Figure 1 (spheres, one colour):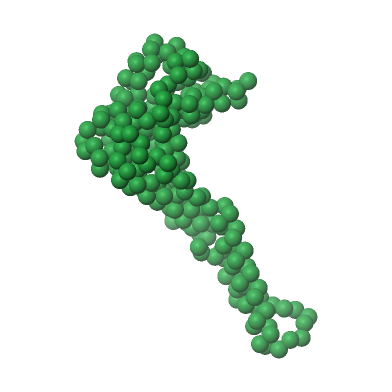
Figure 2 (cartoon, rainbow, N blue to C red):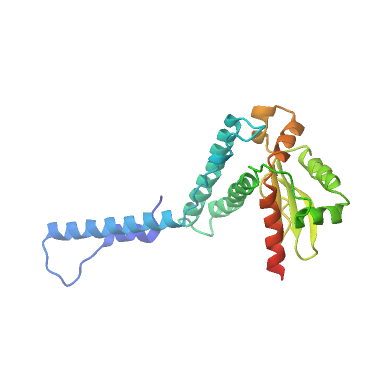
Length: 242
């Protein structure tokens, strides 16, 4: 962690006014204050830093190898680390500088990469098919004509050429469910849209196990969807509108 501009000034300019003490005692007091200030900054940084979530419970999910998940978790932790690093750097550079602008743009990519992975891992680990009486299922049937027709459209998004994400978004204003492609991590999000179901289709999400067979990966994904959680994302939004 880099210390702020004012931290550096304090380290070298600590004074103890109106107290007569020898140089050795003054040096000791300066060092004590300095250490306290550094400790305070480190503690504050740790309190506000993002912490990787534990998704080890997904190990053993049918259709996925343990190695695929372990590698994926490591990549996710990298997004968390990079988000914290960028936020720290942005606090310590001139906002009018070129570097500040470049890092601000990068922050969106790292931050969205972190959050999308969390949404993705959260909606895995399911063991039961979607409840045909659930509000989400009924809404999908009402809007798309059938669950299978919606699923076909979602898979169509997931098999588009390129790297990114397939998302089922809910537009709460118009009460519409929309299958959406997110390019990379930060391009294509629907403003005010609520993520209901998230599927990672970056190459690292499937190629180590499935090679180029993305459809086989998508089949494994659908067999592991946590439908109660996806339904709760939908119904919680409904409650917030009431």
